[in-house]
Image (cartoon, rainbow, N blue to C red; front, side):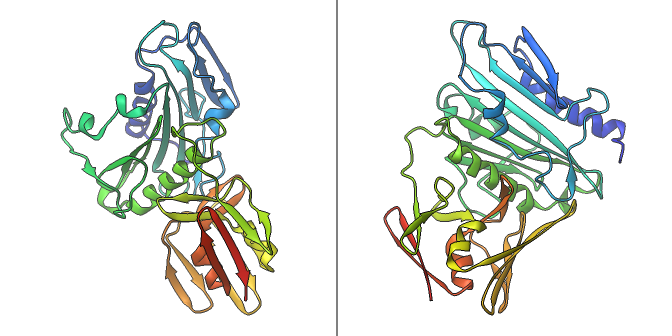
Length: 323
């Protein structure tokens, strides 16, 4: 187990404590290395600890990283429910912040998700971050793809986006030159959070989206797990199994790889990668691969067609037609 040096600890603890500043915590408890507080004595967002955990990655879902308790606080996750909820008026917010340590470099990774009682744009916008900082954020994503209603990044180590009532930030605290960080990895993590926001059982993005129906042999599969991310339909790889696709999973602490085979055709994808390997070579993906509840989520059309499956879409219905 790698120990954090004092500078890294200070930076990480500062990031964890800032979101809680000014929030009274009449109730606080610790469970499973998580520090949980609830200020909702007068008002509540109606979100539980489980609701907040559903918005971020599980402790073991990021290959190459380990979710270790902070040696000074004995927790790796902070959940603050109903911030400002002890007052009858004003902003109302719940948050979850979770940290991981890179098993090779010792770099620290932080994912934070904040949920407001109203549209998050009333409280946080790109303009708010342009002032009072020596490093100015750059509007847009590393890949130039649109995430959420608004997004920006700082260098290659920090990514921010806003969607509905939610603001999310992914940050790397690196021990080496920040220029060597992988901005697309940080962005891939953000896409996975965006998927979770849109999947959430509590409506967090305003008007409810019409769900996408995926049909294989005229039978619906993957209910509730097939959605559009900025115009690209994504789904778990398991939705392809009814189309005679066999899946092989190789999962270790360092990588998460799934190979899909159909006849002589095959596709291999890795968690947080922007490309897939196929029997015909490597292919750049329209959206990155990311994990969700024990499965890898992929751009459906690209993977299906690489396996020789025709994809037809009409409105919110997508049909897979094995050739």
